[in-house]
Structures are given as structure tokens and as C-alpha cells.
Length: 584
Image (cartoon, rainbow, N blue to C red; front, side):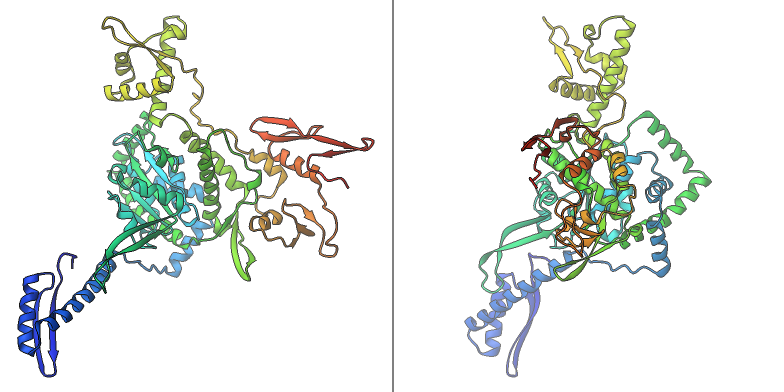
């Protein structure tokens, strides 16, 4: 079955007369022979037979096109869990130490270290069930283990909810089934295999859908007409690559993960490779299918539930670059993914929405605290202007320069080095040193002093050593400890914030909630004035931002900055009003 041939068994009859033959309708000579023989047999004109044969040809083309499309579409597998499998999966999802259990199971499956990458990858895969899933790019040197990390995360996900390709053509994504990727994982083993599909990937991640207009043949008239093809999202995109020069537009839509390439990690991998040949290793391998099946069943039980964040108005994020608009979305989606994976440990909220009940899940402070820890490591690294390997090269260079100028008892700015020195002392290849050194020069971490009369270039390191503690930091995030003081119970959510998120304001907690989350009135006395005035509202927000109470009250106007609130006086000054407060 293909578009370049249409072989069929054709029967033409009139009364008791008939003629039958098998031939390829796309072959003009075969059609001419059939038309002539059928006309003679039925005693009809050749034009009559030719007209009827043309109608048959158009109808068969329509049926052929439908059959080919159905054959190319992946068949959805309906997975039915047994009562035992369902109970075991629910037990996993209800485990209070679920995240630790996930990391432990990764290690049992042979993936050592990489705790942050494993957990971030797992949560990103869970985010496929959100309205805006996360996208992951794992970038590392060849043979560092990026593909193994991606394959390990994918193995924990149900087979029917992941689509993996080694390469993609430029238009291939546009012609997939309309719902074939919805709430699924699209994994690409090597980004180089999807260079032509980069534009479609960026659109799919940003817009959540794809659409294209293409020409095709009308099955009834045979004329060329315009057809519209759509691919619905959302979809979680998972890419692994060795390329350090990644398209910036695709990079800022994704979360970058870098594989640990340290000597200690290599030593640990060698150890587990040796242990895999022992009895202990054999027993571990035999346990792996059971662990993977358990997690796959648990993922099948996760529901597509809207996630609300009642603390979102207190959250803070950097705002000095335009790309941070997308990075905050990643941060917020990470929080929602943490809440979603814990849905079997939370009580769902049921509300009325347009006359129908809607179940929702709420974020708690534990989710924000864990997301902050991951954001420091993951988003903090992606916000750095250097690629992970270039950053690592810079730290190695800084250690080398510091050691040299201490031994030679000279000022840091006086020390010069050659490129050959780095190749010898750091142990990296010529191409690696040349590439990363050029990047450091472009970003003014290193200055190149040009030689004269054919002398070699000398280099000077002007990097001041910031960020050498090895702990990536993402400034501007809210202090969760301050939020915990405001909300001592992290499991009981604030009804007002919950209702505010949907724009639905109902009675609760002795009153109802206005649009800024304050109790105003009671069911018995709806006209009662607000219990908390503007002053208390600003004080509570300052407390969550870690700003101590002062007089005058300070409001947050940026990260690590406070400015006095504007005051207005009325009458004899016995009453001072805060900015925005109405005169009673």
C-alpha cells in the first residue's frame, strides 16, 4: 500500500454482461486496454467506460489515503491494571518519602549520583499532564552518560505516553495525528537528528500546538485544494545533545541539565560496572523490571487535575532580563509538577464552575521549598551566561592561576599563561581548550595579549572568583521559612487564595474573601467592613518577603531593596493614611 501505485480488481457489468480484470489504475496503458475490452464486452462506448473508471479511481484514492493515514498512526494501547498492581502503585504514590523513593529506585536501576538531574527529569516527565509542561535538554560531552540518563527517566514512564525518535525531518511534526502527542513525552535521542525540526519544536513548546496549510488533491474533483493539519499539545519535550552551541531560542524555552563529568563520578560508574558482573549485580538487574513496571503503573494512575498555587502572589523572581519571563514559567511549572506527583497525598478541592463540579489540587509550602532547591541548581545554571562545560573550564583555570601566582609570589593580574600550558596542566584536548578559551575571551573573563613579531599570544585571567563555592544560586526567590511562619500548617490551604485563583468567591472561614484575599463580612452580616485593612495586608506581604516590620512600613519594590511607603496626611494629622488607603 503506497501512493505511487493503485492496483485493484475492477468489475464492470450491465445486466448479465460483465467484464473483470486486475491492473494498476495509475498505469495509462492498462486503463486504455481495460476500457477498450470492457466497451467491446458490454457493447458500450469507450467514453462511457472511461468516465465510470475515472469515478472509481477518485474513490479508491480517497480510501487509499485514509488507509495509509490509519496505518501510520500509532495504535493506542489500553492498559488495564489488576487490583494488585493498582494497590501497589497507589502505595507508592502515597509514600510520604515519595521523592526519596524515586531517587532510591533510580540507584537500584543502576543510575548513580545525578540526584538533581534525575529528580528534575522525572518531574519534567510528570509535567506532561500540566497545561504547560517543562522541556528538558541534557547537554554533555560524548560518552558522559546523557543518553543513559534520558533513557532511564523515560523507562519510568508508561510506554504508551512517550514517543521517541532518533531523527526528524523539518515537516514531520506538522503531519502527526491531531492528538497523538497530547499530554505525552516527545524524546529525541540526539538534537542533531532534529535540526530541521527545530522550528516546529520551538512552536510546539511555546504555543502548545502546531498548524500548517498544505495543498492536496480533492478526492471528488481531482483539483488541488488547501488542507489544514493540526497537532495538539501540550507535550513534554526531552532532548539529549553533545552540541554546546545550542540554538538560543530553543534553549531559553527549555531547562538545561548537564551531566556530572567529574572524576569521582567516573570512579563510581566504574565501580558499579564491575559490581554488575557479580551475584549482587545480577540480583539488582533482575529487580529492575519490577521497579520500572511499578513506576509506570503509578504514572498511569496520575490524573489530569488543574493545579492551583495559593501562595503565587507571594512568590518572587528575578526581573532584570527579558528571558526571565520564560524562566519564571519554568519555576512555577516545577512547583505544579511537585504538587501533581503528590496528588494521592492531598485532599482534592471540588468547586462549582459554570454549573459543573471541578476538582483541583493545591500547592503547599513543601512543594515551593523543594522547587527552590531544584531551581538553585537547575535554573541557576541555565541563567548563567556560560555553558556548563565552559563554566567548569573557567573554575579549573581559576584554580590553576591561583596556584601559579601563589607559588611565584606575584600579583594575580601579573600572571600570564599560554594555551599550551592549559593543555598540559588541565589535561583537556586542544580543541576543547581553544573553544572554551575563545568563549571566555568573548565574555571578558580572559584577556588575550597579542604577541609581536610572530610571538605566541599570552592570556590573562580577570575573573574575580565569584560563584566558586560550587553551589549554583538563583537570587530573588522567596524565603519559604517566612511563609511557614505566616502559614504554620502546610497541609491546610487558605480558602481565600484558593477561591481567588479561580475568580470564585464563596463563604468560608467566618466570612467571604475579596479579590486581595481578605475576609470581608460574614454570612449573617455581608456588609461588615474588612477585618484586615491595607496596613495589615502590606505587613503580611513584607513578612513573607523577609522584610522586618518598621515604621514607616516598608514595601518591596525589587529584590534586596526597600523603600518607605508614601504617606498622606488629612486634617490635623491625627490619622495617617498609607498609599492606596481610602479616607473613612
